[in-house]
Image (cartoon, rainbow, N blue to C red; front, side):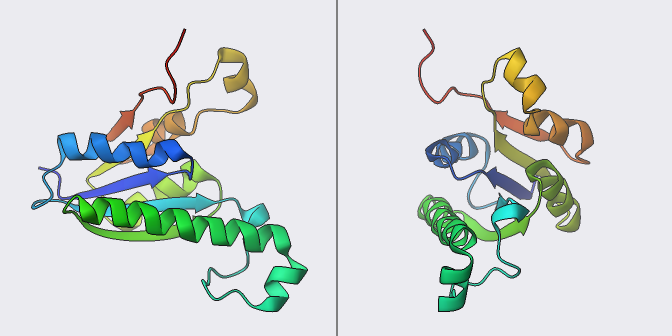
Length: 154
């Protein structure tokens, strides 16, 4: 039986849609959720800190903006899961998303990973490999993919 679940979000509006999938498969009284948001190292400050200094904001505006956005996304996700009755923790990890997800799952002895799936064409997948595929291939626990499209296909 799964007890600890890692929810990998990417900050898109669709990330919060994973809540519906989690609610269908996980009982809030039996599961501890850990929300993970990977932040690209190229846009991250050395240390995550919600109290960004004026120096950080003026000297590194792209990184400061990325950090503020990541903090907001994380707060919204945790709040949504807690409102649904789940015990929830969260963290932000620097680095390539698939590697960060796999590393966090191992470090926390996660029983199940739940993540979204981007609907890309074959050409786009060649140029931008699937994060979900890499996690499925390398994770040491089951991976549940929420593959509902962001918008209806025509």
